[in-house]
Image (cartoon, rainbow, N blue to C red; front, side, top):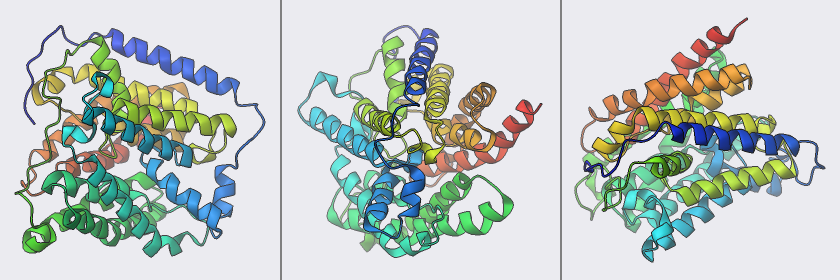
Length: 391
């Protein structure tokens, strides 16, 4: 990551206010649609049909948007479709391409290939755990090791296959075990087991690549990922801040692009319009979740603006996919829960992630620090939010 020289005034606090206004507007639109006739089967219907081809297919595609807690096939298709548009726009040199997808590495197709392979293999190998109709973290290979290996070691069939296979054989069972053996008995949010499984399995995989270099040969030395910003220094003003908040929605699957995020959010909104009990595990709280996610990212982008300028990238997306949705699921969608989880998550989890990532060996992708910060944030902040909002 190369520091980028600032070319304009610091990010204005107005970015936060505008983002909040847009979020509240979206929440109002969603709430007004809550009474419309149901035109699509809900989350409970999908869970009841997991032993049937249609239900299992919806589950598999929905895994692609599970990391942001939307869990719906429309959101997933929107994410990949928006990513494809952003990749094409980048290849064509379009000015409207947004933040370069996959950090400008040019490896997005290989990243998608490796991630999808890990997802499909993981579901084929471990899909039997779904037969009881109970939720399982089969999505984890799509947003972890396979993509990180492509970014770390480069493109190519060997690396994509190695990443996909190790994602299915290491990451998925690690998260399954932690969720069932630790989170459920201790009544912890499942996201803790998800991300700890990603971290532990990825560390093992990166060391395996050191011990068995044939897994990633021929390839260059580990590079800690590609450049995190466009070659031309951006103007870190209001427009940049709003775009950055939007891009944070697709950061967890390593896309980090506005078009991918628009596809993701648009697909979730469509799912909600057709059946409010379909996305976000059928809770009916998609509006509140979107508000909390946008608020957490906006606070993080504003507070950590200087770090964005100095480092070229900063993990302000972390509370968006961990502390905020976990707090809403555990404590409900009250405004105080949304505000506290977004604020505390934005202030504490990004610097913790960087502190961990900066201390990792060079052959380990720094995303491990991000997921460890997610686990710590959920373990500490979710109970704190509950204590603060308790009557």
